[in-house]
Image 1 (spheres, one colour):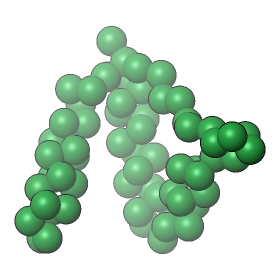
Image 2 (cartoon, rainbow, N blue to C red):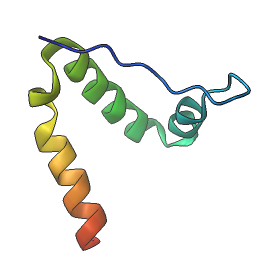
Image 3 (cartoon, rainbow, N blue to C red):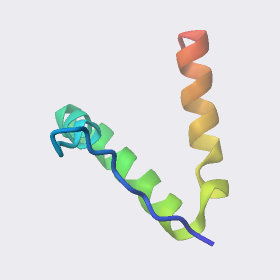
Length: 62
C-alpha cells in the first residue's frame, strides 16, 4: 500500500531537495521525516491532511 520515496538528482548528480531539507531547523526536519515515513508505509492517503494543511497555508498565507 505504501510508496517508495525517491529523491530528485540534478544533472550533476546532486540532491537539491535533500540539501534544502537539511538546511531547515531540526524541528521541521523531524516533521518532514515523519511524513515521509508515513508516506512510505501507508501511502498517499496517510499524508493528505499534511498536504492540505501545507497547501492551504501557502495559498492563504496562514
